[in-house]
Length: 418
Image 1: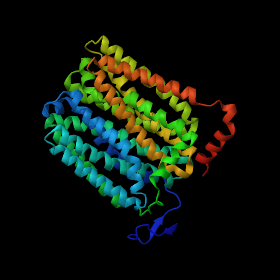
Image 2: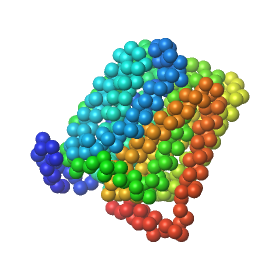
Image 3: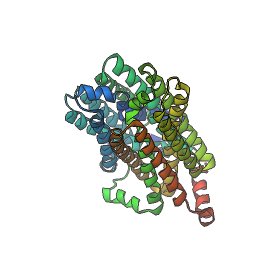
Image 4: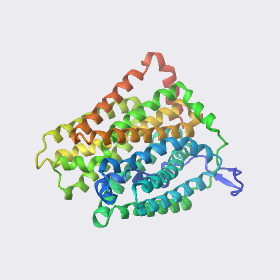
């Protein structure tokens, strides 16, 4: 145990245990659950929201693009501005502002105001998620790092398993505005949880934006980050239009929530399995498996969309679970690679990976809003093509083991040593 003076002066003694177990990261995952619900819930009621705002679904999907793009652009800026703030204070304030932004979204009378409130929510999420990931990676023993990161990402994945279906229920029973208000309540509860459970942790040394951007010049970082963008664009290109896709597969409205649960359950299992496998088999093996599965899943859904028939619930349910698993298996492995490439700048590279995730989502949603005008099958085939592109990128950017055996061994020692 050690005492560290707080950088802000309002917490005079900060008690930091030498190490934490994995259980300490679950309270942080509650916050990422709130963030994930906020980011992905629109897919559960996009057609209804479009009707309520008197716009087309493709136009309403701009709110998804705005959230993701704002997060991607603001994450480096927000994390630089808040670097010296005590970690617990930052996490609680970020979730509190996220709560207020969602309540404002629920009250938005026009698409323009809705987009403005979604940008505010993105700024709050950008302050929370990278810090939560960096704190989780720092407080556990190195050989548990990938699993700790998987728990944090699992909060996002759990949002697709529980938060998005709950949003579907709320929007069906009441309306889409009630769903966004529910996210505000969840965010506030998560803030109270972090305040009650997390220990006092100091802020970091001030980091200028220029210094933060300098991390991108590192060869290992620049090789890894583009894959995050490509992979997330692939899996989220059709995601905002999930309801329309399920409609095209002749899934009745009463079964749509079940299909969303299948997607979310696959996301949770995939996220945690990825962290476990990355610790034991290495992240490259995980990523190759993930992108094979993603391409096959989206291609399978596209084929079924071309030849829909009544009664193929089981096949669609399995593919939805595989879609969720492949979507959320890539992030723990990617974060593992980035931290191994720049361990002294873990907070910075996790923040950039978060930016890459949401940049990929914004690019994918923008492409999807064009493709959905052609058809749901086209939207899925576009996603399948991008998944194959991600797989190709893994192969062409993975240096043969003979040239990197020493650095690979060093990375394994770094991430596995007690």
